[in-house]
Image 1 (cartoon, helix red, strand yellow):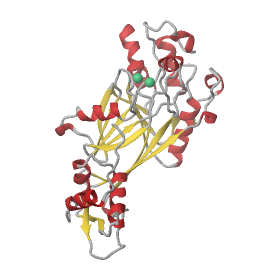
Image 2 (cartoon, rainbow, N blue to C red):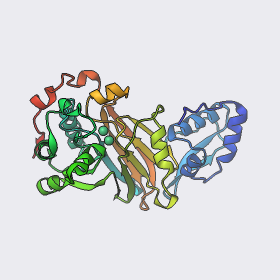
Image 3 (spheres, rainbow, N blue to C red):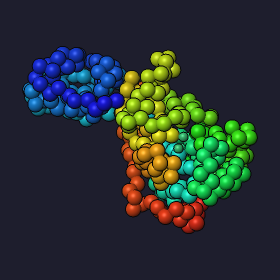
Image 4 (cartoon, rainbow, N blue to C red):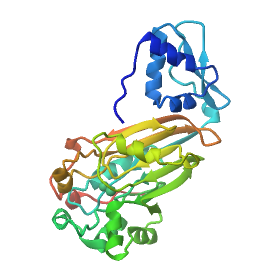
Length: 335
Ligand SMILES: [Fe+2]
Ligand SMILES: [Fe+2]
């Protein structure tokens, strides 16, 4: 999606203001105008500058517009009635590529420590748990310290963080699937037998519901696009209306981005692996980190407030020396 340039003229603000009817849900409004919550806040600020006062209030469990006559009373922060809303906090990670010499398991451990400190009980992993074996990439074994299915599946069982109170729900991605293509071997088979704290949801994608909120996890194939939002936007566009989730989490691209589109909170989840030789050759960027999501939803599973917290690691956080991570890192176990 190309970056939108908002027309800040009085004429345009007047036009948008006319659509902001009293009691209109802000979710419906944002969907109609393909607008994120931060963009809506910007529009409300412009309204205030032009002397048009409009609030967002909670009515019957929905955030709606309320036009006011008094000046300078606009509130761009929704007043949440927390008593009526369900709070869910999740952690989301992706693309750990275990077995690649550029893996950053120590950073995954940091994220799990943070999740534990926050009292989070569910971590979602959006695929490419292991680095796999591409038969058409003869250079790949030189970039790996684990070769073949047994070594990579065993590493997940032995080294994936094991933290009291946390269940990891995961899908498998394109790299994981190479083991199936090579010999019908599935990482999840071994992980499920040995790690009760790790729950397999599906190959490539899975739909799940947490506290009534529909979430779709996706791990596409294929290359990246020039625009960071483009692939996520396209994946959301192909979802049929009746199957639309409230949140869509997408791995594979090793990028970080979040936006609201078709009333779906879309998150492109970064990876937990340093840039590989393959990415370097292909000229692909690589973003390392994860997300913490604060979700406030009503009894029907509608999101009333959503706060995606992006946690990104700097190059100084990474162990760039190839192989250092797997030589030094230990499994994180919190009992
Ligand atoms: Fe990946
Ligand atoms: Fe992938």
